[in-house]
Length: 303
Image 1 (tube, rainbow, N blue to C red):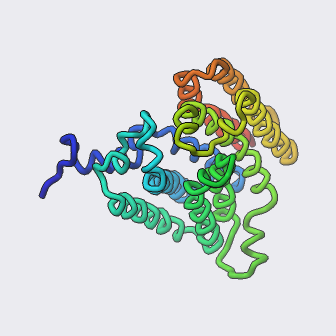
Image 2 (cartoon, rainbow, N blue to C red):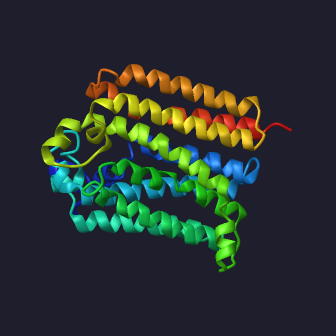
């Protein structure tokens, strides 16, 4: 069996590159708001089983998303220096291989969801549909990051469904598994995704303009930095209002204050719009989500 690919890389190395094994920032950006929602829905520690389901499931779905996104964007990516050497784009891996890998990862993630309840299972189908729409949105919408924001935030309603849902097929039961609180958290988190993915889009703006792809960085133009900061403010303000509504006190808000300080630091990284500064801001954004998560855990640990 030939285990090598173009350039002498093994097949395993290509698959690990496809799912960004060595770049966990994307997984963490998905994970922290999902775990925050899981703790809030549970009123504290959700139990090891649910924790494992959502941690492993988040990794698997992010990996599957990378595979499908690389297939959808392969013609664009070949014209961008940062992405030209990705396995599918470079031709080291076939489209069929990448799609098969993505499907296998998504199926394993779905198998994990099956260990929860019917409500979570059905909401996971909606989450998958949004994930599949995102790569195509870059050809249609001026702000495809908004679609990504929904996809990257869907772990929130799924967490509530896994904790509070049941196995009834009634519309009322399925809708009731995800209360208004969850949708407010998703709405707020969408602005965080808009912030960090606009930073990401600022890295490739020149390439994206040349090849005709749509991004928030292009749409916002010279207001990009101001918009990123406004997105951070909107995210933190909405989550702060949720905290007030839930009667949370200082530990929760301390986490939001730390997150705000991190957001302020990002302004110093992106204000000059350099590729290095914008990419660093994106790559380190998971610390902002981690600060919020720590605040949630600390709040719900109070007795």
